[in-house]
Image (cartoon, rainbow, N blue to C red; front, side, top):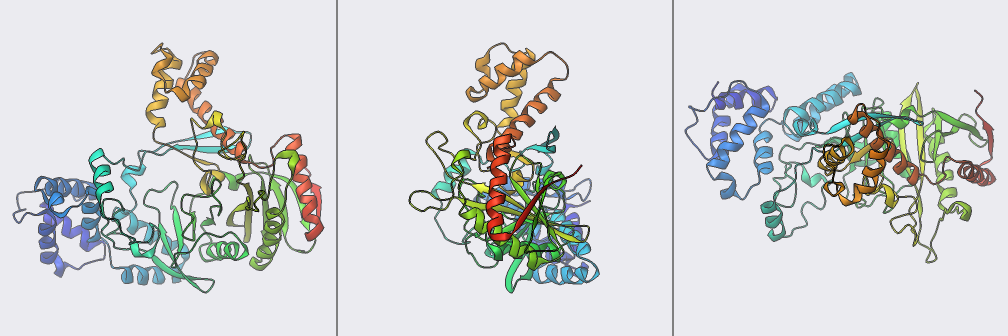
Length: 502
């Protein structure tokens, strides 16, 4: 099949164009690749990735990328923009599908975002993912290999590129259809669903480098900072009401315990049930002021309060009281500190909502970002002895039991494997920060499946990462401290504690 025909067919099948547009589409393709004569170029099938690779290579060989000052990503996104209906069309179809069901609406939008290569499924498939059984339930471990690393030339060129404040950030709606540049991702084929959230204009999109199935991002049309309060929790619950088959949650709004983007209000969610949703109840308690609400702590490495109710207003009121109490709560016995000497706020929560059995379920994960001389990166941040595995912030997704580990581990763990299995004998072949760990693993290894052995060891490290981030530890001292916090909470909220009966 001629590549012009394959390209036109994909564009027409996307719903962006009609058969009448075929000549126009093939001429647009000639313009993009910088070559008029394309009749001799054929592809074995009309596969999206075959077409992208063939046309990108052709444009590159023609010097078109250099001439335009484009990166490969910019060219590919511009190419796939022709496989993407206009925002108005996408939004109209979403609204029509939503009238049938929210599930049909998101399924169609997800399909479109895959078929135009906005969601980088080919790269995402490179991620290494496995399940780690733990005392808290199964955790999911992933080594994130999907984001392509820039070559040195691109990095150097990006440093020399003119600085601009457009788009304001990578989440702003200004990104929809934006060509991109050397120091900003290409978004020509990006589309955003508009919806109203608690009287505000918001957008819904998918993450291009998804960490889990149907990884959704909900973003405020306005560029305003993240704030965790009752209003934010209400928005999260309203999202779940609108998309009951998806969870929704927010990163915390403070450094160290927050996400990588704190300057633009946004939430995340999606269709996959992440490990924390399966966590067992630990202790039940009652909030006397909220008669129909159920409350419990969870058997989880981080300190979680789970609230369940059919009423959004009840959940917002109860969670606001818990947040207010936590915001001002300190316990020196377990190094929990609400405010610094200068009054700096250290406490917040990571909230997550979902629907279960017709009711709203709201998890409030207690966070503390204060530092000490012993723990300069954060008392409740991964400690030094596990930072060789994970030193970045523990955000929403990790809190829920899905490890997002850095790409460097692919080659570094291969060296650890070679040393532990005896393929190499020199510890110096292992990265310095892994050497103590590699020595321990080698000493304890008694043979068998080396991959299973190392996966289990890596999983235990992530377990520790989450335990480090937990403010009330799972030992007797930590749980007694958690009980003290709930007792303090009872002074304002009328809480009655009771152990879960088995």
